[in-house]
Length: 188
Image 1 (cartoon, rainbow, N blue to C red):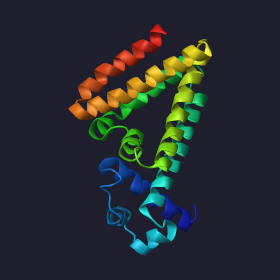
Image 2 (image 1 turned 120 degrees about the vertical axis):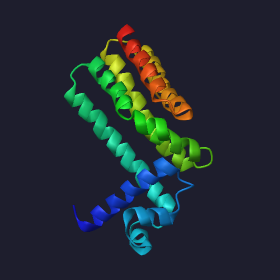
Image 3 (image 1 turned 180 degrees about the horizontal axis):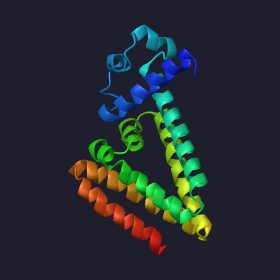
């Protein structure tokens, strides 16, 4: 990777962390400067505004999500195993999810009410996950309508777990509710 690409990547990575942990509005441009360890001029060479960085963060999240889902598709030949992997990924991130919530949902909630681009980018990530979940249920033999309904139920339940675990700061709640998700997959 060329130095300019690496610098750009480091800015996106640092901003992603700050937007997740602090929120977009509470993250000042100077916070990004400090986190990356570059001058403001170096950052504005790559991104003219904090909003431009936000767009790049969303695009990187979409790319990362695509890569993760594709890797699960390759690693696990069985749709049930892929669905369990999705749920296990929630468990693996439970500490951060309990502390900060879902990274995509928190930005969508913070910014989606007033910003059309944020809504569009959030939909891009959420549709990617929802459609992938639906394909897993299709692979298990469900009709398209059943697969879509089950995908939404699983996705909504996962998001709900993230929100309520964060509100209550309770990882045990997270663990307990994830067990229900796994039972849902076994029953269906």
